[in-house]
Length: 631
Ligand code: NAI
Image (cartoon, rainbow, N blue to C red; front, top):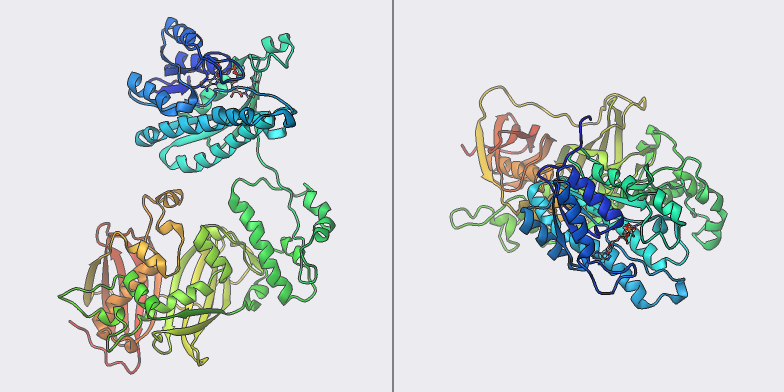
């Protein structure tokens, strides 16, 4: 980057800008073209007293005298909306908020009164929250926002006599970290500084020559840079003083799991691991709570490792053992049970678009438990199978529920957030019972090394209450960036995809999904917020929550079932799809079908975009099937 950093056309609000650091920020931003709201209530350093308009007015005058644009605001930051209103009234917008206003009530812990504690939280933490919350919708609307929170080394490291202040300042770091996550999709960036400068707050503890030397003007350039269009930094924490600028990050020891099958988790087991717990050799630098979840899940997985590998301590499972294909393939996790009745089957059918109308009552057999031919859609089996799949039961449920990640499977640790559901196969050995209990057993069939990525081929067998096989499901998942471990390049067990014939399709069905389709489908078990929470979807780079790939699959399977099986589920033997692109709820799905012998090839695309969403897909009809096309 080169050239002067400017703020022409931008509107900045600096709180507590009547003197000290805030004054320096206001003057620098204005000198670079920003229109500035100079907020200051003009109170004493301890707060809670009467205000004066003088400090803000003097700064406004100085800015105007230098040819800049500024207006004063004399409200307390505790009235956040009023400050933002001043910006909107005077300049029509707000782009930058520097939360700087501050007071001190320093006393040793036992001498701090409730009032001393509360007023510090109100001005620093609550004030920053209220001002920022008032500005945030306007920034969102403009697609631009820069926010600064002011913390302090006192909070980061502790400071004698400042428990109230230190608590508020650390609170601001948490506020900023989370706001950074929430704002980034709208180009609203939030960073925290822990400044050091001579001011009336420091002159009581520093000698005068230091107060004079360490000027606020040395802090202001970092603030200006972070508030500029040029900066894409967010969620940062910076210490800054006298022109020295440094970023601060977390460091965490590798830690230890303080239990194993033979050693319960106890104060003594924690003590016995103390050296490892506190050793910063091989430390990492976590940047999100996902990183923590990784370790916690590794500890949980450690329990399984211990159970299946006699004698090894769970605490050892944290060691990086590389990829062990044999171990992954030999893993036999506990079976999961899925108990359901007609309600679950009906909910699933609604989730994949079954409806009732006066004109067409053919879906009633999937939606009404009192119907003479009441039955489950064959693809309903994916629900119990999915619960049993991927990190199994525990991991997948947690991943779905929290959007967090797990550490993979024994012999193959991976980041769950890098997992893409690539292909799906299901095979029916008999129709799904309309209620009862399924026991689902999973195993890794193959671990394929694709160079850049890895592919997990995983089979789930679903048994009925009579222990007879009801269905098998095969999940093919791609783990981005996890290849290159020297494993096999292909799998003999992976069910192949198949391209349709080159002729025009024999049949085409189009059907519009509902805007609420994902909200409905998720109730069958896949609660991943990606399918319901706009903010979460935005973090994944989607403009809106997306439909579950398995929901689109359910739609397409239903189209084939209707077209070539007359909705007779006994004629539906197997299905294979490759997931290509996501579908947005409300879009129209088009299923093109080609029948060749007992196989119906199909392709599913989105009418509105023309994008293919399911490819390489087919349904195999039961051998005894006398299926004929409805055409
Ligand atoms: P300062 O006392 O020179 O300036 C703070 C300004 O905030 C004052 O003009 C005051 O009238 C104003 N203010 C206080 N309560 C207000 C409220 N409720 N509403 C609106 N304005 C209010 O202090 P300084 O040193 O410039 O501090 C600025 C910020 O930097 C504070 O948040 C402080 O905690 C923080 N800080 C300063 C350090 C330093 O070395 N000066 C060290 C670490 C943090």
